[in-house]
Length: 238
Ligand code: ADP
Ligand code: MG
Image (cartoon, rainbow, N blue to C red; front, side, top):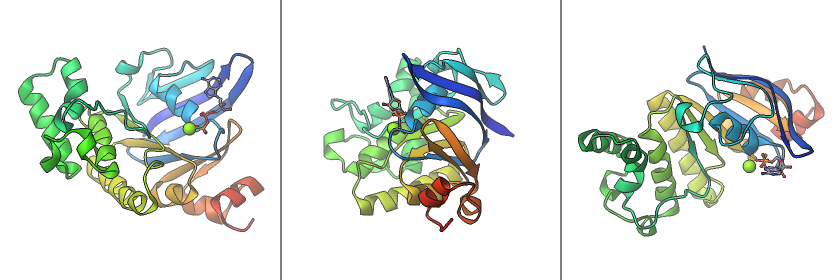
């Protein structure tokens, strides 16, 4: 089954068209990665799926529902940003609970969901701390926890590891893979890092200048690139 479908999606900022006629099928429950150089339109595409950016052409469906004109809160998606955006004055628990409180969830439900997320993220012992008392990796986990408690149909990650050092990045990559195995939700992950794409993805979409160059399993792109750009970018000889 398809998790997210984009049909002939376009985006212009004023006169500048930055996404050109993108059509793609993102499988439900899979880990999909948008990869491409800086400025190719990865974040814009992700923000359009989230509803944070209006589409200027085409259609977006999430699990069979046309969400093109739907407000972000009703789409069943949760986004994790690279600059965590945690509330410094709130504890880890309250940071994770924030959206549930906004939705007026019961205290017992909030406790249960935050603890379940903290369990998955191995953050149970950190719930009383403030973000300033955490390491970079732990802060990133809190940001992911805020998405988990919302139980979204689709997780959207915009270069969530790019602020971390190389060693921590490798560790967090493994954790994200484990998170995906445990939760089994549709995940869409944006990165400019080919290694990250190749190691995390079930399916990769290679972007360049607002066009999808090729889509497929990592090994397929590696063994059988459609063009010189994909070959060069994914790293195999053409
Ligand atoms: P990526 O995430 O792949 O680095 P982006 O999606 O951020 O790329 O940007 C794609 C293109 O759209 C870039 O040329 C960028 O300058 C442009 N762009 C992004 N956001 C805006 C905006 N709010 N206004 C005008 N141009 C934008
Ligand atoms: Mg970006």
